[in-house]
Length: 182
Image (cartoon, one colour):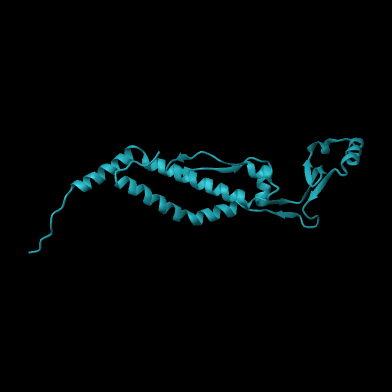
């Protein structure tokens, strides 16, 4: 008759206690929140790297929100509150923009729209124009830059590699009885 050997349950009990402790301390929830925050920051860095150098305000206004849980899903937002951010991202219809040039920088000036005929003439004499046309007049669409769209596609491709690495780290910490860092 074959001999199967002996088996010590203490190791299994210790492992079970480690997992229970991790559950009680909400280690996995903290892990998910930290991982999502890290991925959002990586996305933000990629988005900003894709920005044109002369879009300083647009580049600075990108933000990462807080991680929130809705049912079984965790959500984190990456957003830009600038009025024209979505137009740069997805494109827009060619149009006239009120304002004037100072050197090689265009200064948007919405007040030009409401000026009287005489005030417009004075404005034009002072600044040289009342505005500029954005895009080609015959072709009515200006293509978007898709900074966020492309960056998020890259992150989605890279996500499994990052997640696997982080999962291995946290499982090693739990199984070895070391509390994960806070």
